[in-house]
Image 1: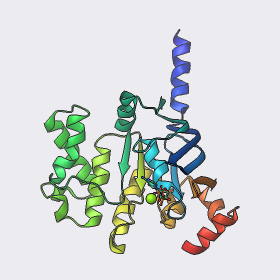
Image 2 (image 1 turned 180 degrees about the vertical axis):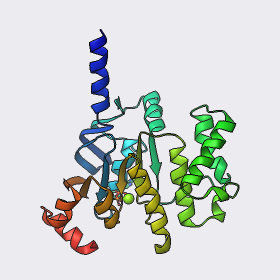
Image 3 (image 1 turned 90 degrees about the vertical axis):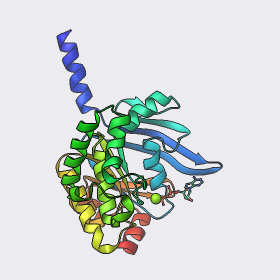
Image 4 (image 1 turned 120 degrees about the vertical axis):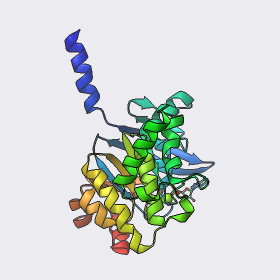
Length: 256
Ligand code: ADP
Ligand code: MG
């Protein structure tokens, strides 16, 4: 019995955090994602790139069921996503998401934006939630703004708040959808620096971005999507120096 339990535990720690098998999605008649297969191991950092409209956002939105898939399997932290609302809630509690446009609640102060999830979803006592929120605001170097409202902050500051808000839920994995695309150039670095720190601490991350410097220095794997398919994926060295597919070569020639 003891051995069995140990075996189970070992298996669990080697289990991928995200497993996607032969997944397809349609918007009406439009086949937006085809034959997606992807495994993300704990602590892995994956960068997803590809032309506009290739399905990058749809793919990562399927991982926390902001979009539904119609065929195949998506398994997050051992839970298969289906219409079971309980499972969806369990998965969402473990998956942090950072969007291009921050998506903070404009009518709530920064600190209230951070404590909302822990208080209502995790049932954390208010005082404890506020202490944790301040700790994460310090981590993203914005603690002095805690009482302000999102509209009073710069884009870069708002995005750092959005990252801190996700961290307050203690997620197993963080999904980023073009987190720096809406920012003025001088603010991109402050957000990337926070993401680089997070990567260094061992967070599992799936990042849609065209910041190829970030991909080269942080990603374990870079994935290229086109037309709803994963066209190729490789280590950053191979991906950038020796892309295999014509579509990848064309894309890289346009952005590098
Ligand atoms: P990307 O993030 O790579 O730019 P998206 O995942 O946003 O791509 O979109 C992929 C394709 O799906 C695009 O052609 C887009 O127009 C279409 N699309 C996205 N969202 C919807 C939707 N809610 N309904 C119908 N089509 C959509
Ligand atoms: Mg997108």
